[in-house]
Amino acid sequence: DAVEANSEASKQRMGRLNQQQFTVFTIDLIDEILRRRDGANASAHLPARQDFHPKRNQTRQKLASLAILNFKKMACDVFFELERRFPNLVQE
Image (cartoon, rainbow, N blue to C red; front, side, top):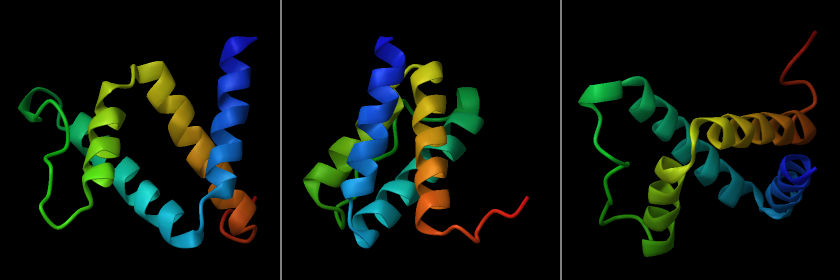
């Protein structure tokens, strides 16, 4: 199914990120979660920052454009990658 294929592709892309890239993406994802949590008081997307590379600002804006289901899947994919990179992070 197309949704599963997209999730697998997302997991593969995250797996190819180096540690710094993955950390930056995870921070931006958390910032977007907090922005969405603020709801009606939130801006349409995370504000562009002069100290960030234009591509990073673009990624932050793209996160805001994801529908809630796709955004949740992205967050799950990040969590999957965190578990893969840091197996002792989450203990059962």
